[in-house]
Image (cartoon, one colour):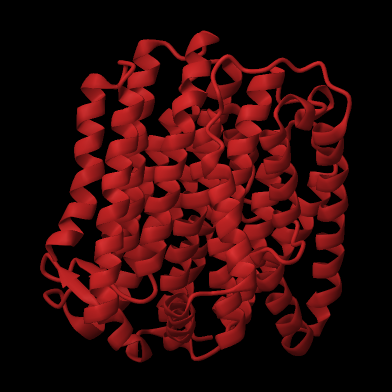
Length: 484
């Protein structure tokens, strides 16, 4: 239990410390140190839960179970590697005049606060606190997206704030409706917003109220997932903010929003005893995959292109969980893991590539492999991995999703195959000349942090070839919990 409090205390303390020291040269190392402390604490907490079972804390307001325990470790790990990547990246941004001391202080402080909100959202047992954490994550990332203070970044932050603010308001109304249904069964003193209590009585909840509640919760948290048509904030936020922010948005925030949807889906399935929640998730997931795939072919900005790739993959994950069942849920959880690792690794490579070229326009970025072979290969291998080339983990999860769809939802299979084919052609045709074309790019003044890129790609490769027994057991247990 003490370790649980430590997981939350470290990033919160880091945010306070960096609010006062974030402008100094040593702040980048302090940011890494706090991120490392958070990661080690989550590893210890995960080991404690594996050995001792689910864990409650603070009058059952916090709850660690098989559905969230490894997501905690994944979140802290990506937070750590992104902090390592941001050290040389932010030094270059400072040298280019994009980051002033005040902006640097704001970035470091909000980065730790964002990690804190993500961990709160994953660990809380209270659906009200989950909503508060998601709203706090919105506010911190709005600040991070707008940190450059350019007209484009301010516009992107404003769009992000408005769309996600409206979406999260829908989620609040859904949470209120959920409480209304639970109060009739549990009572006002029984912790009517505690997920474990709701899960125990879900079959007794009013189906009419729960149907309406899930509709609002799906719109609200679906906006944060980036599902079409609530996706418009995501490409701008990725393209206009610092690249470390793009990495944590794709690698962390989208996963946590999917997790919130899954918690709500479990309750809805139990209350309704019909596949309504799954059908909604399949429909909007498939729509997101199709729309994002075709938008990929129209992009000229490299960060916007990979942002649309994130929408595509979130749609695929949502579709998998909508199908339900042990195999589809297993595939969805695996895809969440490998997408988080590989997409954040791609953004690390993209960040260094755009700094070398001085632009995010893909036509102006050429011959990366000649200027920096590690950056070039990082981007090429990362792109192949996220496009589902074997033996990377994305191939394994997409194969499971497609074969399950062929068996259970054959009508959707041609659309999935079409979207994946269009996405492959769109991304590969643009990345290939960026990596192997003729170049006029100059080397960076500071050596890039490329270890995180290849660590992420290595883990993504490992999950395609071999899933450790304890991780496989988690996927299986969590898949059974999600049901469907």
